Image 1: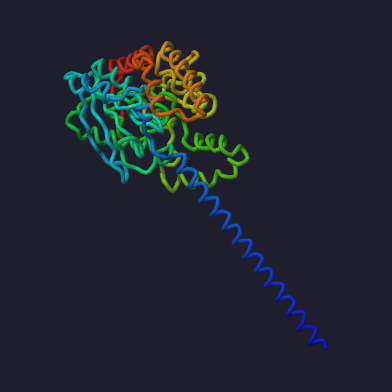
Image 2: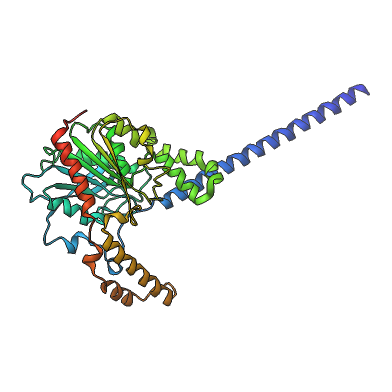
Length: 378
């Protein structure tokens, strides 16, 4: 009797153990499935957020482009170079300047291409600079299914500078960097790499300091602070998988490590690259490079992008938006194409594209002082 009872107890214990193992296996499988789903969701959303960059439809935009707006007055030469597995397209402007002040290498913002800044680039060409501008990975004329992530702009700029060091039209010129937003980060972060012997100065507009901090701010805007904390490991995992050792590439480290003159410019109303949270400007106390200078843009249009135009152009553009919104409302959000084209053409294209020359003069003066006073450093 005691033996049979003992056998029953053993069978019960074994059954309990099997049930426990099954529960643990199911729980582990569930956790694995959740992790897999969260990872897949993160990758999907990140790819959506970092899709291809380009330009608005010419029919419905008053934005100037090289062709037709500058083609007859400014020459350019196309170049190509590799960044990772993609071929990037770049252009050299200002070849007519036989004794240029230097080589301005420009890095554009995300979701667009370099021609979104064509008015500013042509200003530099007109002021005796040779300009090398390119479309980054996944942008405009360059290859790439998407823009990949926030570190990619620095990696592309690294490859652009490597290319410039081999091109006979560029390699003997002192280099000055200029970038906005995604590119504003790039011109500082690239100073962590090995090009500083040729670079004389850099100017960063609206740049973020840390790609992961900027990424988490974007995640918060999408899913809230609590959701951002949950997704943080998956976002970090995505960045590590894409950028490896460079996934934490810091603009602040680049500024400090280089010892080069760096001008950090940011708009007081910028809430995209939030001036108080993620901007390079907000990290001033962490910048130990004595040659770094900071300039706060003030005024009605000192936001993330509007400051490239002068106030008159921005005022005029507000009227354009007001009337376009009224037209959209009238047609239920779907303006007939022919009417939309006529509406766009009814506005003065030259006025809308009037640039903020005070800003460009400020940047050029900074470059000129660097040319006069600074020696190249490694």
